[in-house]
Structures are given as C-alpha cells and as structure tokens.
Length: 366
Image 1 (tube, rainbow, N blue to C red):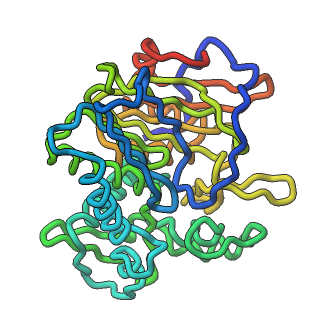
Image 2: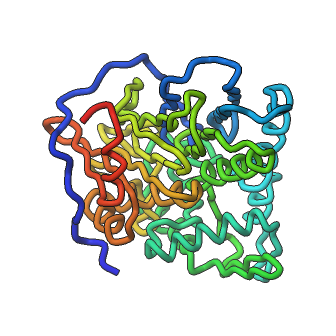
Image 3: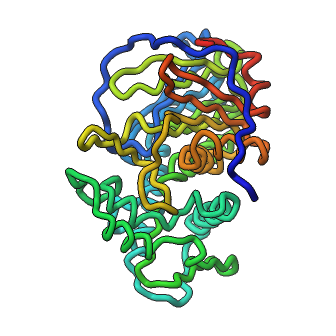
C-alpha cells in the first residue's frame, strides 16, 4: 500500500486570520484536542438534560433531548460516573491498578487472559496498526513515556537519540499476538508496554452511548474531549451542531460548524498537548516508526465515521502520517477526513471526497 501521493483537494479559500476567543490555559492531561459542542438552536428547557464532569484527565459531556419518562439528571449522573470509573479501571495507564497497567507490568511472554472489554480495545488498536502499516501502534507506550506525554514526569528537554532507539526496540505491533477465545494477549517481549490513549476517548464514548441506548435514550450527544457521538436530533428537532476549533494553543475559536446525527467525529491535533524547547514545538503525536513527534504544517485532523473508537485512532494516525501521506491514505480508504494546515498566508483546509458531502450543510468559516 502506497502512502506517498497526495490526492485530496484543498478548499477554495485560505482563512486569512482567526477570531479571538477567551484565553485558555494549556492542559497537559488532554488525550486529544478539544472540539466545542454546540446544540444548534437549543435552549435550556425540560426537554434537554445536560451532564458533565471529569474523566481520563479531561472532561465529558452528555446531552439528552426528549428523555424517556423516569430519566432524570439525578438518576443518570451516578451511573455515568460508575461507568466512566469502570472504563478508567480497564484502560488507564495513569492508574497503576488498572487492568491495562497490570498487563503492562506483567513480564510474562505466555498467554495472558484479559477481559472482553480490554480485548476489544486492543483488537481495534491492532486492526488500525495493520491498516496503517504501523503508523498507528498501541505498543508506542515506551516512546510516549520517554517524550513525557505519559504518566511519567515530563523532561524539560527532548530525549537523546540513544534513548529514542532504546525505546523503539520495545515498540512494534507485530510483537503482540491476540487470541479471541478465551480473550488473551501474548507479548513477544515481557517489557512490551501498551498505550490505548489514542483510542481512549472513543472507547469511552462508545461505552456511554451503548449504555444510554440500553436505557431507551435515542436522542443524545456524548463527548469525551475531542471525540463525539451524536444520535437522533437535539431539543429543537435539528441535527446536533459540532464546532471544529481553530488550532490555537492559547485561546478557543470556532473554525467550522458541522451538523451531526447518527454519526461520530473525532479531532486530533498538535495545539493543546505539547512542549517547546529551543524554539521548536514537540507535540504529543509520536511517530512509532521514527520515534519522534510528528513535524510539519498539519495542525489538526477531524474524522467522521460510524464508530467513535475507530475514528479516534484514525485521527491520530492521519496526524502522524502528515499532510500528503495522510490525505492520500484517507482518500484511498474512503475516510471522511478534514485537515487544517498552517501556511504563511493563513490556515488552509483540505477535505477528502467522503467529507465534502458533509460540508454542504455546514456553516462557519469557509
């Protein structure tokens, strides 16, 4: 599979500037990039329930339109918190007692049984790794930690080349084998370290969405930071409005609003979780092949799709692939992707064929 030739068309105009917004402190705990949630035309009324809180080092938001009888904020809130706590207990690398942390700490190279939920997340990571030829790789954990974007304390400067090469030796999705029945994984080396952060938001969103539907809820919007799933319509009977942000590190402004219904969107970028050293910015998107953060003018990628966990991972993969290879890959795979690039005149946007249809109903910046 060739990933070298650009194939996507840029949109007709370049944005010559950005609209100022309120100041926003950098938050190193974000797993992805924030996407502003806007319920178009939605007023606060009895037909809308809104819940929000903290999870995974970031935030979650749940909006429910026309809730079924008996569904109240008081009945939903504790159950959502329990569900999110369970998700963290499965996939968090920040919790040393989570199932994933215990798997990472296990030095065995024999089969290690895992829960069905953790297996499903790992299996999706392996599927995306094979699809992207290792550009997306859940074994990238040693590099993520080395660059200071994991649970370990961030260094004040980039690692040495020797340190990068030592960490790279522990990375490679082919070093991990899966068995579906019973669910189990086998590591080729005992110090293999899995990091599901690039799938975590989508994983959590899918778990919440499935639970809401089990309660008979059919019109909802669920977000964990930059990954969102919307089903049905908002309280005004219209599609939910999702605003993709301008890729600005110090403030928030709307770049484009897209209507969303019965679909998920995930945005990944370099403008929230990064550090600067000697005039260069190092973002949290690590290329598992080179061992270093991606570099270039690509600022963010938004992906639309049916499965929030899958598009969460794809947004990361496209960021790592960069402008040309990422656009070519997305076009070849029929992925609905929207790229925002920094150029000298201003921000440039590129949409794949699959995404362009959604722009016909979109509003906001051109």
